[in-house]
Each structure stands twice: as structure tokens, then as C-alpha cells.
Image (cartoon, rainbow over all chains, first blue to last red; front, side, top):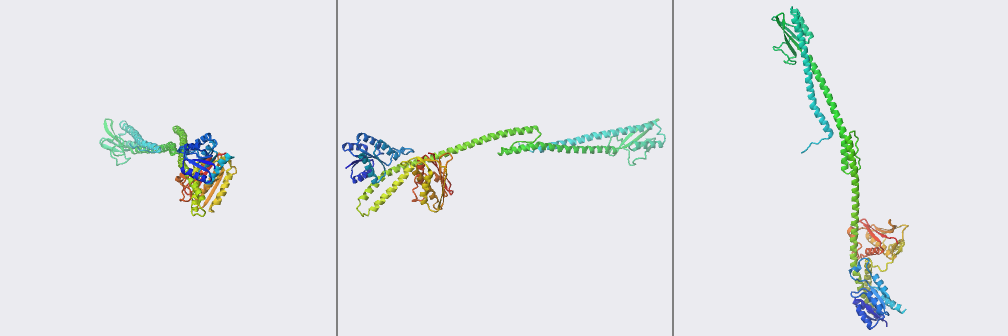
Length: 135
Length: 478
């Protein structure tokens, strides 16, 4: 059974993801901050980390960089519906959802997914992220 | 102090007439006096001389010897001396010539002046001494011929002076007219210049050098004035155009700032919704899958999911306006194909009351665009045009042509209800709509705006209430 760790500051979001993946047969844990995630991973490693990019206390891009360094075997799926680092984020020409996800991919995320998504999109993305590793 | 003003012609003629009316009578009476005096003097001189000759004849000759000789001499005096009365008192007798009027009586006092004594006779009384005897010669000379000569001379002088006066007045009028005509002309032209017709040249046809010089000096001033005026007008126009350009830019800036503020708000809300929609969609999806077959809740949950998907769609449109369009692939694009596709799609939806006209130019350069988004942009503009004409029907015209400055203009115009200024200022704001609640989301034009911005294109609107609307999108060349 593949293990998945979900990092998202929204409890409902990470619970919903956990619910869908658990039902599909994954072993899923979820946390609200990057700090908790690293503590969790040190105890029990995960095959896949699903991380939000924009979180009040953590920066998803930093999370990906750290994961790539400290847990190189862990696959990463970056998710984002945008969000903001402050009001300025929405000024013209500012970083957009697409740009966030592109940045995540550049940092080393194996797959990306735009919020909101449906169950089948999530399962496909998870499979792709893990499958790429398998392949 | 008020001063009576009168035209120069009247002034000159008036002065000439006034001066002559004072001078000519004076001249007439002055000359008349001289004529009268000299005629009178001549008359008196002649009378005295003649009287003296007759008296000498009586004193020296033999005229006193017989009454017949006395009468002969007296008659001679009457005939040759223009006399009207001749009498001699001698030795107590009065001898009087038979010739002449009997009515004339000699005055008691000698009448020595011409035109004196109230009669028309000039009397001379001369004492005569003949051989120790005293006599008195009384001669009367008729003044009338001399008076008639004086009168004739005076009449001639009068007519001469009257003729002179009329000639002088005529000349004065002619001169003043010739003087005033160029001045009048100058006045007309300068008034015309004052009222703004600067092009009229100040030229006068006059032999008066000063007026000619005055006119050419004034015309010189006029030409300078025209130059200065033209320069000023050009400056004013330039300033006005700069001002209006500045105003336009400021308005564009304000509009842009407002759209950005709205975009910021809308973007923030949209992102929140993205997060909110994740649990709604996933939990509902899962719940649906776990429901026992034939559960009454299944259609309810499916409706939740449908609504959530619609919400997702709305959020996507808002993000499009906020320029978060996902993957925008700006490639050299032939808009002709794009427009053709959009029209095909739109024509399938449009009711028959809308007539669709397309005018696609032959030489349309490639532009920087994303074909999929460009189709959506065109569709949205067409939909907007259709909605402006849905109650009345009308003509939707889609034109594609090479822009004068390079690039391509896509022009979508309708014959619908048009918009007022307040509406135009807000049409690109998300959720701004003039339609009733439930008829469209109010996102169509905000999506157009987002797409236009992402292309680096620009959009302008030309509209008036009741006169339809024309949207022009300028695409820069690839």
C-alpha cells in the first residue's frame, strides 16, 4: 500500500483529499504545516507528498526544495488554486496559479494539479506522480 | 464731457459753409460800401464840377444879361449835367429851367450829401457875384442813375459771391468725400478685422499720401496680428489636444486602476472559492459513490456536484479577468480562421432576428494571440452584441482588417440599445451587467478584457445610447 502525506492549511481540503485517496486504497496522513510534515516524514517516510503551494505559514516551493534534499525518494504532487502572499500578489503581471505551479514543477514537483479538481482528476494525478517514479 | 461726433465729410463741409456764411456777407457788405462810396464820390465830384462850370459861366459870361440867356444856361445845365432841378435867384427874381420835374422843390438847407434828405436829388447851392451883383445858383442832380449803377454793381457782386459760395461748397463736399471715403473704407475693414475676419486686406485707393501710408501701416499691423493670431490659435489647439490627451490618459489610468482593484478583489475571492470547492466536490463525489443503489439522496448530491462545477466555471472566468488564464500560448495566429470558427459557433446560437455580417480583409497579417482564447473573446463579444439586440433584433457586423499602424483591428458592432458613459466605464468589471438578475453572469466582457490584456492587445468602445456599440480590438503583429 502506497503511503501519502497531504500538506494543506485548509483542514477540509486535506480531509477531502485523504478521504478520496483512502477510499482508493492509499495509506494517507495529513498535516496543516510544513513543520509537522517534516516531523511526520522523519518518523514514517511517505511514497508521495501532496503539497499546497500557498499556505499562510509555509511556502510550498520551500517545502518542495527541502523534500528534494532530505527525502529524495519521495514523490511530490503540487496543488494550487492560487492564493496570495498578500494583496500585491494580484497586481497585474503578478504570479498566477499557473506561474505557481510552473515554479513548483521547476523546483522538482513530479506532477501538478489545479484546484478545484474532481476525484478522478486527483486519482489520475496521484497515479501519474507515483507512476512516473515506478517507470 | 460729451463731445458731439460727426463724420469727417460733414465736418469739413460744415466748416466750409460756416466760414463762408460769415465771411461772404461781410465781404458783400464791405465791398458794397466801397462801391457805393466811390460811386457817390464820383457823382458828387461830377455834380460839383459841373455846378462850378455853370456858376463860372454866370459870373464871367453874359448869361445874366437877359432872362432868355439865363433860361438857356439853366436848360443847358439840366440837359448836360443830368440835372433835375436848376434855379437862379437874381435881383429878387427866381429863374427856373422849364425842363425837368415841376414837383421838385429846393430844400431850405443845402443838401450836400449823396442819398441824403429823403429824396433822389442832390442839391448844390452856389453864390455868384457878377459885376458887383449877387446871385444864387441852385442845381439839383438826379441821384437815380447812380443809384441804379450801384444797385447793378451790388446785384452782380451778389450773384458772383453766390456762385462762388456754391462752387466752394461743392468743392468742399467733393474734397471731404474724397477724404472721407478712404477713411470710411479703413473704418469698415478695421471693424471687420475687429469682428474676427483677419483675412481682409487693408487697402485704400486714395491720392492722399498720409491716408495711403496710414492704410499700409495698418495693413502691416493686421498681417502681424494675423500671424500672432494664427500662432496663438495653433498653440491653443495644441494645448487643448494635449489637455484632452492627458485627460484621456488619466481616464484610462483611472479605469485601469479600478479594473485592477476589482481584479484584486475578484481574484482573492476566486482563490478562496477554489479552496472551498475542493472539499465540496470531493466529499460529494465520494458520498455519491458510497450511496446504496436507489438512494433518494443520489439526485440531490448530483445537483450539489453540478452546482459546484458551475461555481468552478464562474471562478475560472473571474480568474480569466484577473489575467490568470492558465496556459496562454501566444503564437503568430491568423485571425481569419479564428473569426470564422467563432462565427460558426455563434451563428448556431443566434436567433434569426439577428443578421450576421462579416467583412474580412484580404491582407490580414499574423498577430500575437492564443487561438483558443481569441475564439472565446470573439464569441463573448458576439454574445454581448446579441444581448444588446435581443429585444429588437438587428445587425451584428464583424470586421477584420489590417490596422493603419500595423497589426489588425477586430471590429464587432451591433445596432442595439448602446450604452451611456456611466455604463461604458464599468462594462469590463466582473459581475457588472445591465441585464436582469439571472440573465447572464456579467462576466463576458471582463473575460474579454482579461484575454485582451494577456495578448498585449487593446480594446476600445464607441457607443451612444440608442446608437449601437462598436468594440474595436487592436492586435499587435506577431
